[in-house]
Length: 248
Ligand code: PEP
Image: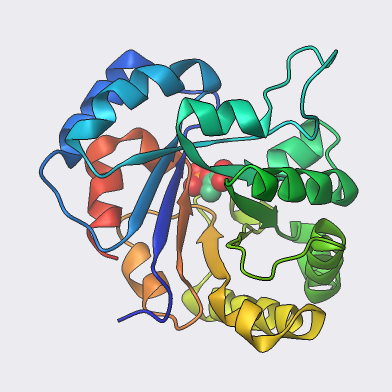
């Protein structure tokens, strides 16, 4: 039995469509989980997915959220809109957004606050590159991303999720080992205790993402501080994703 309710998040990125929505929901019909399972499709498909969700325990989330509430911000989608659309969480600061869309820690912090203000679970992604790991700066990098990404956010009585996603493990087939991940998650929880307090640190769910599949999920999930998984590529195959979720 895990100390915190596990959560498995599927990040479809810029993939999928009506077919994938139908086959994904169909795979989960009639299945019961003691786990939160949240699929993040592209924005355009959220409403389609919602119409089928009454038949399964799947929930929907967003791959991003605007830092702004409303106004002249072309191409943005606000936290309030996501909440109204039926989202339960939003991913913030994914490494692809940091690398390709110039997202930074300060912007992430604003997004975390905005998500909390609107009752969405923020999933703040942090993770080191291969070069940073080789240079032995992993913990320093993670601490900066964590402390600046949360900075002034008041977490008392709030739920938040941290996703540890080493950049070198994303989409490479090279997952971090369970021991490596446990060590990092323990470090993150210790730092959360220092930045906030033990009660908050104990409540935060810390999930791992990076080449998770149905084979490596079992050992990862056995680790004390791994409270769930963030799954990219493998979530595009509904049978494979279901097999991962059934191991939690
Ligand atoms: C991700 O992009 O968040 C991710 C974990 O991808 P993958 O599972 O494909 O490595």
